[in-house]
Amino acid sequence: MIKIVFFAALREQLDCAELSLSADDVKTVNEVKQRLSDRNSQWRQTFSNASLLSAVNHDMVAGDHLVKSGDEVAFFPPVTGG
Amino acid sequence: MIKIVFFAALREQLDCAELSLSADDVKTVNEVKQRLSDRNSQWRQTFSNASLLSAVNHDMVAGDHLVKSGDEVAFFPPVTGG
Amino acid sequence: MTSQDLFAEISIQAEDFSLADEVALLEKDNLTDGAVVTFTGRVRNNNNGNSVTSLTLEHYPGMTEKSLAKIINQAKEQWQIGRVKVIHRIGELHIGEQIVFVGVTSKHRQDAFAANEFIMDYLKVKAPFWKKEQITEAGKTSENWLDAKTGDTDKAELWS
Amino acid sequence: MTSQDLFAEISIQAEDFSLADEVALLEKDNLTDGAVVTFTGRVRNNNNGNSVTSLTLEHYPGMTEKSLAKIINQAKEQWQIGRVKVIHRIGELHIGEQIVFVGVTSKHRQDAFAANEFIMDYLKVKAPFWKKEQITEAGKTSENWLDAKTGDTDKAELWS
Image 1: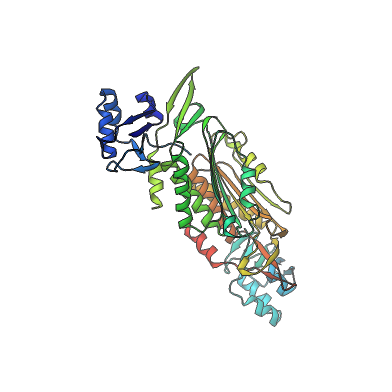
Image 2: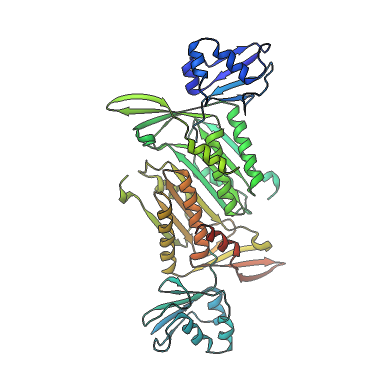
């Protein structure tokens, strides 16, 4: 399984902080995103935001980054700390 | 009269912190310096140091800066604060 | 100073911090670093012209520490610096409160300035923190997540 | 914040100073400036590879204050900054002791960093301070005036 986590405005828009996906059907971060978009129109619209960032195992990655079982994949808006 | 002051290593080399010159004979900072150099060989050697800085009335100035009676003219080595 | 005296500490905390205590730790038994540069960020009252009353800071535990450690290592590769401390607060913070601290020591003031500014610039675009502001206007309170500033991304790219 | 709340203070003093107190004054009733950058310079033990035991700081009273005020005004013309404090100590200072403090507040961190570094760079080449170091080697104590570093002049010229 792959653990998926959401933060900040994205978590609120989805009303979801965390879920799991089977690693069998998704090979990349983009495929994870596509799978999540397919859940319903609300999720599709939320993931159509081009500014969303992705991290795998606590490192920022691009959409073609490979994912495997046991990974933690995170999606979040641009950061605003400091 | 023009008040002349010396600081730091320059003051120690000259063994003099302050003196006065008549304003009648000197028109510029360079002329003040020349007049001081003429005192003796020790002063001449000390003022031959090209890195010496000059200030008139607390502002750094170049050698062609005009001086007049009542001015305070300072000579000192490059600064090393901070 | 021996190498084990060099440290880079990261703290993500809800509690406030003391600038004086942090600088004292950066300077303690550190007689080779003559330069200490600190940055302190505080909640101000005029973000985007709104009347902000407080902020809530969320972060991504685990990734936050990892990203800050990476940023500090990049700074250490580029400049000759001694000790580094980064503190970022989380949770609810009110106007005037301290949010973030970066402290850097070095033998050379230029390195301390550059490394400190680099760490702040990268923290702004790489460290997973998000601010939600609480705004009170005409007696009405609303909340909204801050938008990232494109200027921050541009500034971080200037270093690379 | 009204304009009279903006201040630029200069202090030339023999006594030590408290970083915490200085920053508290920069931040007091100042809710618009979210960024505070400080520089602290201390006596280190390895100037030019010699074993420095202490420094004596001499200055040119009157010109010192005037030159620092000019430097601060130049910074205020170039960057949007709020409050500024510059402290420079004089007299005999030992290893580890604080020599100089520059604190700058701003709405924008970039302005606070740039103005602070600019003030230090200009102070290094324009403000009439001179350091004499006391060196102890093989039980023998000697004194010498520090030479100015050409690097400092070069760095100050980068801003113009």
